[in-house]
Image (cartoon, rainbow, N blue to C red; front, side, top):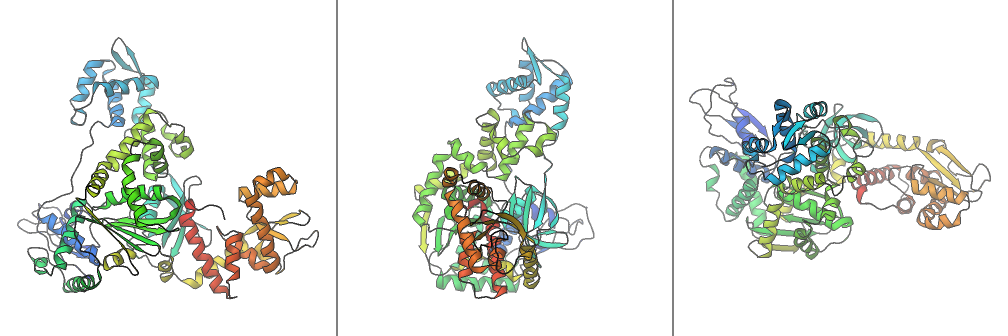
Length: 625
């Protein structure tokens, strides 16, 4: 599908020899489109010109709206953040280093001359001065403030930039377990959250999981990237204005009005118009509701729930984050874009439960314990919190990469944590917009429409392409190579073996095992194959070998898994050990897999790969097997 857009721009000379700019997929923001297309035809009395190639209906309409807004100079709203206290400390220390000593009132007046701090209260100013005094950056004597120069100089030059150097993560091939390369954490989290492909080591990959404690990421190989690889930086949001206008246009299209599409400087290609007509025809015959910008639609299809909410990326991302936390283990994974949120369910969830949780969000805004549960699992918040600790002089720059989640919790209930949570809530998440939305839903100014359907609606089908289905991965990989690689890896895995009869233990590679595994000491076939890195299992092994029945009783679930593993080994032999060598596969799942296995090696490997991929994506929500 191709959406060809010609846009009007008045420009000065810059790159005079570019005749046309070609953009693949939606430019996402009006300002981005202006900047990119503005590089074309940079000659006096000529207009910028560009083509936008899109691959689905939503992308086409989004690009169309962005093009119209661009011609009308309707840009994304730029919101200034007033009174940023972290920046205030840096500026205050800079002034003191220049002047050496300054009266407190004069210092306050000087700072308030800056536009960003024009509304700064004297109370907040004093809080910052007290904080700087407590961490021994300044001295205050008879209202005279002066810097402790040696500490201030280091602090000032450590905080000259608000951009933190990201820690690099070791990226591991989830199939071969080999190191691919190193990538910064924010890049990986963005790819994981947005389910987009990345290029590393000359190959395309999907990010399955990111482990902050071990600084590692699990990647799954794909032979073709379904998306253009993302860049290093934050994925930019589609604005609420653009998303809302897209649904307004959909509403007009469903009423049969197509005449407006090629008016003015923006024109669709014939193939795009055909795709739009096909979508409209499908929607008219099978869509159970009317598309409009003043609705909030919830669809449920088996274990998938779609919330259709055309209010921009930011609002949906925040709403999805809160709902995912409130719904807990019922959610396996979620995905959002500018037009809605999709939840993939582990346990049954009613539409009423979704609505109840949405109405519950305002109640937790001032509940810091609930907010911690959400934010301390949000990588962006943790990075921001670290930066605030640096700017508030509580950690040194060289210690940034050593600060993990546990250390951050040591600053619980401090002034800096409170500032970080409030800033993230109101400035980054723009929680006021969510609260406005919920209030409009409660007052029925925005209508909730809910449906339990057998099949996806035409609108929901547009979301499905973005969901992290395992099947999609298999369509784009060379399965033969992956099967060979995972078989080789599992055969090279070392497992811990425990004889239930004589308590003898030993470690062996799977490849070195006989088809029938026995204890080399007593000859028993009751031998459990265990993961040596499973702490709970190994504690149960220790208690069993020392006959500590009291401690073993506390670890009864782990001991049951040991007994089940021994039963599987005695019945299935080496193949049971092979299956349990896979990542995340415990005895319970291994039993279900082996009972249903038809003896075909390829089908077994396929099931193992699917399970490993799903485990790596969702392990933070899983309990032990």
